[in-house]
Image (cartoon, rainbow, N blue to C red; front, side, top):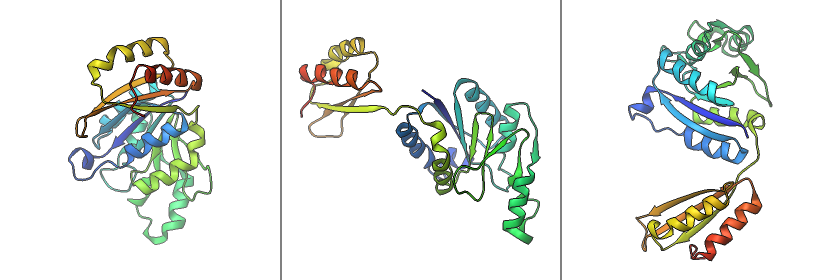
Length: 236
């Protein structure tokens, strides 16, 4: 299955000025697609920090998604950071320059053209009916940080990242984690294709433990669920 990492870029997130809206959405979207998310990192707006994280993730995962830092201001340095991750420079892409000049007219100044200053060797993806393409450097997809724009652009190219979706099941028990640990360990050993998690909900009355089962093997998922229900783990 395809694997992925996310690099969220922005000082405003690390200083608490704004909440990160993009990670929760991407996590759910990738889950639906069947793309296995392996890592999420939030980094500051510096070329060095972006380059270090992107280089590491690019070497480990099939896809890397960056968000933020692609605008026209001084702190928008994602293109430079991604380029540095691969030992490349940046250059104005003539297609992007043309789009910006056509759309902005007299307002297309030097600052605006920073948005066309992309890593050398990057390609443009035109999937779907888009006005402005997505810039991709090798396996790194460079998305805007504005949540509405991210969602719009991601959905246009989402088919490229699809794998086999994961099926899930959920059990709820009044028993404590120490009481159910042996049954969970036995199930994990017997059905290795099923990922099993247990999560106490201390704020609920009465307190419960939610057990989640996840797998791409529907038969194994059903068998594991039946075993745990037989062990008395489900209230339903």
